Picture 1 (cartoon, rainbow, N blue to C red):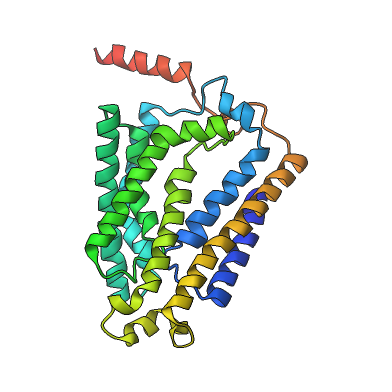
Picture 2: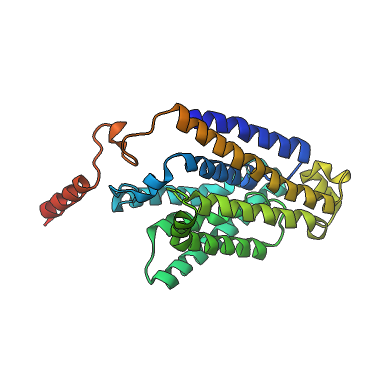
Length: 298
C-alpha cells in the first residue's frame, strides 16, 4: 500500500507532463503505464534485499504445474482483451486500427516467441508462453492507432516476442548475476523492454504520419497539436517523452524503495504466503498432496 500510493502520485505526474504539456501519442500506455511501472518497480527492488531474494534458499520463488495451469487462463484472457485495452480511448477508424493492429502484433509475438523457445530449448517453456507471447500487446501500446500497415504491426510484435523470449530464457539470469536485479515475474522482459520498444515505434510512426494517411484531417483528429507542430517536432516530443519517463520512474522508484525499506519491516520469510494467508501449502506439502492424488487415481 505504501509503495503503490507513492507510485500513483508520480505516475499521475508523469502522465500529466506527457499528455498535457508534451502532447505525446500513447493511447495504450506503452510509455506511461508499462514502461513507467516496470522501471519504477525494478528500481524499488534494489532496496528489498535483492541478494537474499536472488539466493532464494527455500526455493519458493519458482512455479508449479498447478500455478502455471491457472496462469494460462489469465494469459488467454489477456490475449483476447488486450486489443480492447489499447483501443478503448480511440474512436472511429482509429479504434478499428488499434484493435486490428494489436491483434496482429500479439499474434506475431505469440508465433515468434514460441518458435524461439522451441528452437533453443527443444521444448516449450511455460514461463515464456505465459509472458512473451503477450509482448506484442505491449509493443503496440503507443502506436496501435497510427500505423496503417498490418505487416509492420506483425513484424513489430514478432520482434517484441523474440526479445522477450530471449530475456526470459537468458536475460533474466544475466541481469540477476551482473547487476543483482531481483525481478520475480520478469516485468523487465514483458513490460519494460517491450514498452520501451513500443515507445520507439510510436516515435517513428509519428514522424512518418504524413506518409501513412491520405489527408491531414486524419492526423489532426488523432493529434490535436498537429497544426502547431510539424511531424518532425512531434517525433522529437515523443523521444523526449521516453527520456522523461525514465528520468521520473527510475529515481522515484529508488526513493520509494529506500523509504519503504527504512519505514517498514521486512517479512521474515520471503516468497512465503503462510505469514499472511491461512491454509497455504508450499514445497513438500504440495508434492505429497500430488503423490497421494496419483496413488488414489491408480
